[in-house]
Image 1 (tube, rainbow, N blue to C red):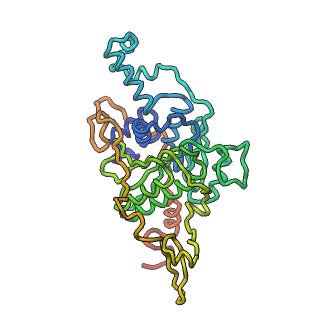
Image 2 (tube, one colour; image 1 turned 180 degrees about the vertical axis):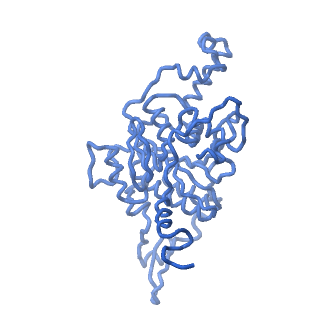
Image 3 (tube, rainbow, N blue to C red; image 1 turned 90 degrees about the vertical axis):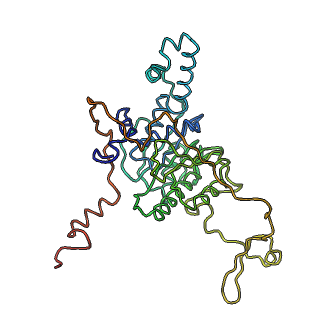
Amino acid sequence: MGKSSKDKRDAYYRLAKEQGWRARSAYKLLQLDEEFNLFEDVTRVVDLCAAPGSWSQVLSRILIKGEKFGRTGWQDRQERDRQYVYGDEVGKAHGGIHEVEAVGEEKELKPREGVKIVAIDLQPMSPLDGITTLRADITHPSTIPLLLQALDPETFDPAATSAPHPVDLVLSDGAPDVTGLHDLDIYVQSQLLWAALNLALCVLKPGGKFVAKIFRGKDVDLLFAQLKLVFERVRVAKPRSSRASSIEAFVVCEGFRPPEGFKASLDNPLGAGATLPANPDMAKEKTKPYRKMREDGIIELEFGSEDEDTQGDIRWVAPFLACGDLSAYDSDASYHLPKDRQSLDPIQPPTAPPYKRALEMRKAAGGAYGKTKGMST
């Protein structure tokens, strides 16, 4: 988000600075909420990979302060426009479509009760009102106890692996430092999403929602199918504030339905590493999955009869939706600025990259390209 970067010409970057958001990514969450109504009846939220805190800031202003953005703000504008068009006195008094934004600020704020929001990231993040921030690694099993303690400090049980009071919504806007090699970037992002999903399974309540950033690659359908195993509805969305040149998108999962007897744990995420039963009788029936070891030491895996469920097309494709009204700004377009415009500094400066210390150590050792002090060239 530097001043000399392409973001200087980005309308959403300028709007974020004008309206007090920490980053332009706040508009991605707002547009997702307009489409999917993410914050309806939501009071307990976990925000993963939260730095610099734009999504947590949206949560704070909507849930804690009671401001109207996203779906509720859109509904409020629609109602005032209707009142103005049909001659309602209230709509005329406020100016209808001519003073929509000003009217929204005049309305009385209605904060929600019992709100609990926990934000986690490896990078430091400036504090926000009502937000509990944790500096932890979501890919490490030790993060689960820290999260459970932050959610319920009074009733925390160190031996527990799931939250006694589950959350309604889990968000993840995390992404790795891209290298430009799309296959590598997609793989690393999928591993980050895997960690976010496993952590969400430990704290999400039945019927809860999960929203995460993904990179759309050639095998993304497999990811959607895997998410469909634990969620009733899985859809992928592209907010208008997300640049069309970017391969990023957001997967919106609703209706969490854990399998019967499922116990979430980062030590054994989603049952990874589970072995199939070694049953010779099943080997004869050829109807159930099994494993067996041959005399030469090779293990054979059988996943059932190939004749089962062969009728019809069993391929499932997640619906794709574009979020954001067409009247919104185009994130890939450049807009002319007024002559008297003054550029504002970011609310929070960019966080230090994870490899900053590595660069400092390499510089102290003699520079780049493997050079060290005391070596002749």
